[in-house]
Image 1 (tube, rainbow, N blue to C red):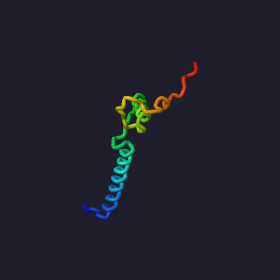
Image 2 (cartoon, helix red, strand yellow):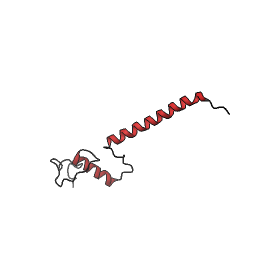
Image 3 (tube, helix red, strand yellow):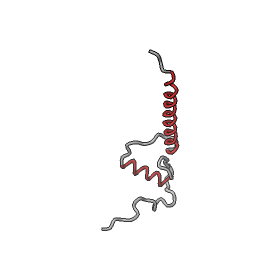
Image 4 (cartoon, rainbow, N blue to C red):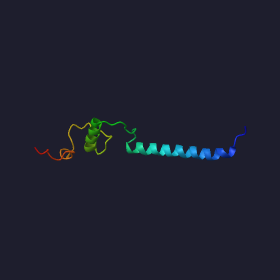
Length: 85
C-alpha cells in the first residue's frame, strides 16, 4: 500500500502547531506562578492561605518567614467590618 507522502507535510505542520501552542501555554502559566506548576482542586483552606499570602507578599505563590506583618496588613482583610448584631 503506497504512502501518500504529500499528506505528511500538513500532518507535520499541524503537529508542530499543537506542540508549540501547548508549550507556550505551559510557559505562560508557569511564568504567572513564578516557575511553579499551577494549582488544581483548591479547597477553601488553601484559598484562604493563598489570600493571606497575597496580602503578605503581593503574590499568591510567595510565602514569607518574617514574623512581623508589613504595614497595612491589619486593614487589608477581606472582612472590613463586624457583622451587625
